[in-house]
Length: 108
Image (cartoon, rainbow, N blue to C red):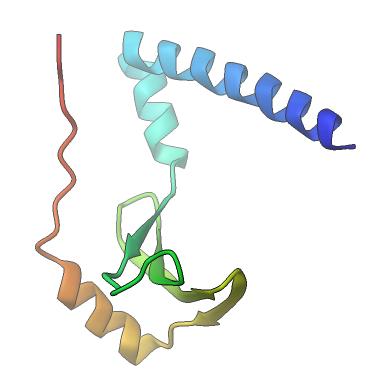
């Protein structure tokens, strides 16, 4: 079973890379791709001993890049718990990280 999942993942990965190559080459493909794209990103919080305990916020964005949902994750000694972030705390979280910017390096 694990090998079947790995094969499926490798096949899907190659398919996604082929799609991204089309997106890079065609404005039409790029527009179509980004109109369907959602994103999520994880913010890992600093801890004194990250090997023993880790926690983070996972933020989900819609196609416009607006954060629409989030969850808090806590991991201690391989025990894992995830909690939903309520609307009031979501607003606070978005405000706290609003100055964070992604920088995509363009090395040629």
